[in-house]
Image 1 (cartoon, rainbow, N blue to C red):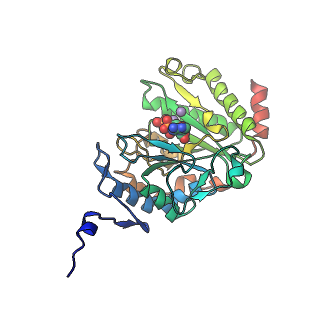
Image 2 (tube, helix red, strand yellow):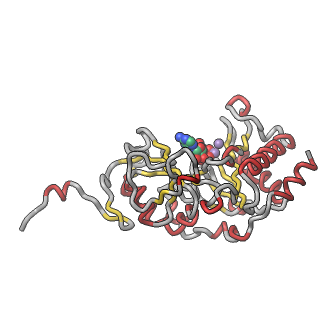
Image 3 (cartoon, rainbow, N blue to C red):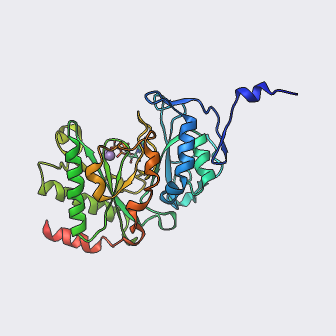
Length: 307
Ligand code: ATP
Ligand code: MN
Ligand code: MN
């Protein structure tokens, strides 16, 4: 019988319906994570991840030579083709190539085959691209800030948002910090929402200057948390819940309940090596998200009144 040596050498296992080339290529030397491990993770997590990508422009972080090589942050398809990845109406982002959207397992696995490690999404859906449906406060610890300060900052942010009438949700970033994600009604434009989130973070810094810095840059952040509102402009993106990260250890961004925060040990508490058991908890901690949106109108007035 005939042996196809070429075929044997070029093993392309099918994962999530997609043939994966170079499956044994090491993506992260610190853990020995391979491209095949990444593909298996995304095929497994797809039912949890795809709802977070649904209808949103997506940017990809590709790492063709692993995380030690060059990383490509792509909002558009450049020279690559990705079957199953949708190219949105170019009118959504005039003057640029089409924004991308992934709404299916084939699209996701096609992106993974093209060495995608991270998926980042806009705060708006394509059908009303000028009206964001959420805002994100990115809690970044400055150098030397202990983790318990980050946890405390998240709780203080939650308290402010809750008092203003919002229902905020929490996720690990898969990196150093936490993301507080707040669903809003699609009534205000980008500048209004971004301006409101700037006010929010300035309010936190004014109330608790020992904990929060309203100024970016390492010098202003020593020992403090910088509550970053800059994720809320038009075209800005945040790593999607359940995305892996292109960093040593391959952290994963995981939705958590506020009651779980105390037990979380860092932004990369979950990573490719331990996320599997978390998949059972799945979307549970974010139950109610779809019904939680309120307008920023009332809160913006309230916040203006206390300034
Ligand atoms: P951490 O918790 O470690 O701060 P993070 O996800 O909050 O993790 P970064 O990984 O530093 O923070 O991501 C910075 C932000 O900038 C992300 O929201 C991402 O969407 C965006 N971003 C990342 N790389 C680029 C790039 N090359 N060009 C434009 N935007 C980028
Ligand atoms: Mn961050
Ligand atoms: Mn940041």
